[in-house]
Image (tube, rainbow, N blue to C red; front, side, top):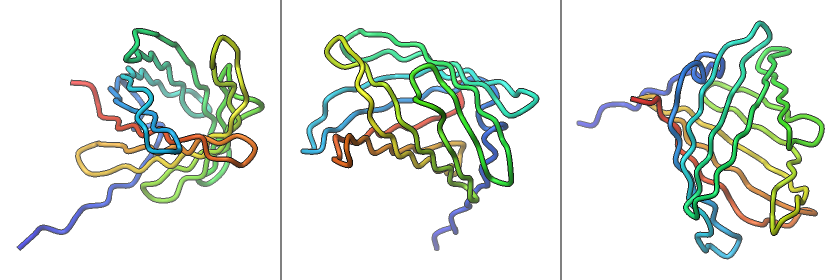
Length: 153
């Protein structure tokens, strides 16, 4: 007899407090794998929420650093800022799922284009966080970013 799946509750400030490893891919709207990457995430609590430092290493050797400042401002409500986010990201937490929406200046062919990210993060057993982000421009889907996070060992 199979054991029932345990659904954890996600507290982002707790989950992202410390070092995590993440592995991801970008798949274009036609289903072609375009990019693979690894991210080391170092998070820390702040008085208003938490801060994330992300260090990306891509399959072509490119590297990228990103810092997020995330603030909790209501029951299950979050705002995030980052250098390449236009305005701020808005987040909604429900149980083990955190949804994010934001406009992002994505580096592409030597310049930055504004795209929309519609993220869904779900915390699973064993501390695995699965993230799917649909990337679009003018309402047209460009592709998806798929990432899995786990506490660093």
